Image (cartoon, rainbow, N blue to C red; front, side, top):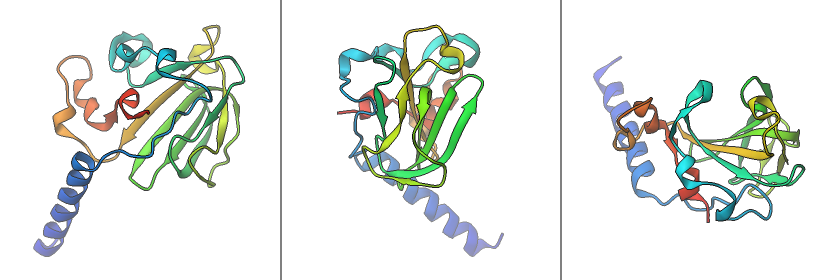
Length: 172
């Protein structure tokens, strides 16, 4: 890599860090229809110990099975499918470079490769994956592709916190 390319890369990374740290999150909507702050425990974000994953990297928003789950921000559906822990999941990449992770869905509504506007259907609340048999809920996490070193924490997997946003703080 030439010196010129290194400088360009350094400027781009610095710009992304400024964007991530100074600009307000803006435009994050509640992903579970009718839910409010009483429907999740704010202390559950980055709670450890938490099962096989070790740390709970999102929040669980509890609602009745079948309650609509909607896109919290506009973005591109980059994954729609089923995985062991998350069950039925949808992953949406926003223009800001955040990945919104919707897990334990009962049904999948969004299609891979489709652009969603804020509020478009993603699926419904369920108990798929390792939530089987537990009260229906949406596991909602927000991952940033730009590390935020100041967000690192001491303790279990604390360095990974650089890549996560607390969804409870982003919601209205």
